[in-house]
Image (cartoon, rainbow, N blue to C red; front, side, top):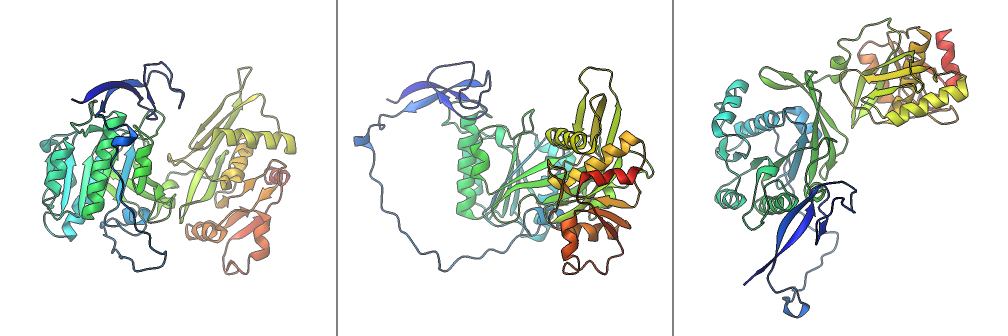
Length: 459
């Protein structure tokens, strides 16, 4: 008879221990140990293991099976996934509660079901009852779509049912609600999430349908459950956005069939999520000109140029240690920019609080925003606004030099399309201006090689 041994599994990283302890030695988190049962079937000794069979090796060059991508009917989804959904791929979608993950996936399922065979798209909800999903479908105007709907949490039943179909798309909402009776732990635990995901992924690869898994996130914004879940899937998509804003951003952080760091922009409306063809115009729609502390940054998100407004506020501090508050950017990088301005330009921020915000809720990570942040901070400190029709981009080094960035041509082209007439750019690009095709642009490009020259714009 099988012997059961108790083990303790960290719900943050999946590390296992033979006894309970308050802190996980692997990830350093406290109070994350949960008791689970591991079966000992008596085959752990080397002499009782079955012998493996020999595997076959093939050369790198050879015939390959080609896949035609499935179009969802939503251009932003196709952009983020690399041109469409690859049959047999597994996509993990994560985001904050209430951000619109279920709404987005229901629209994807309905859009693909309308263009494929009947009874080929399946939406399985483990969190909501069927009537709840039908209410959402009615609000989105998707009640007539040929989507097969079910409410289930037992993975064995789901696998047995899908095996008898000709499925092309299966959506599991969410993986944290699924369970296997073989794993003696509660749904959502590390063991259950890992085992359930393995069974569903194995089924998707064998039958060749697209599998969407919805994942919950922690307070830190990371996907809940074992980190191995992100390694098991082919694509990881984060659905971002603030509840106070009406648009959402779908960001690809891993994609085996396309580019990473690609984004899709959606606007949350009464009828669901509507794709935004020109995100730059959306982010700058509420921008006001002739305001100090405001600067337009020409950034790149994936393969798409995006113009966003960077806002800075510098005010006198009433504390011995001034505050540094940042929304949408790296706070450590802001501290570095302030240190460079103090050391190279003679400015003093030790008696001032500095607040930085990326308008619209977009999160920026590329270093090309350094120059725009510095311009916004100096503009707020001197209370002198920048020209409303100017864009800025460039990376700042610790010695104060302005470094060149990638895809300058795409940034300037997007700025000209939206009516901007001038730009502050790194100097290294000026040598290749004719080769890059900028000679026909109407933009006036000002090349700045050091942060000291930024002061000239505010004199």
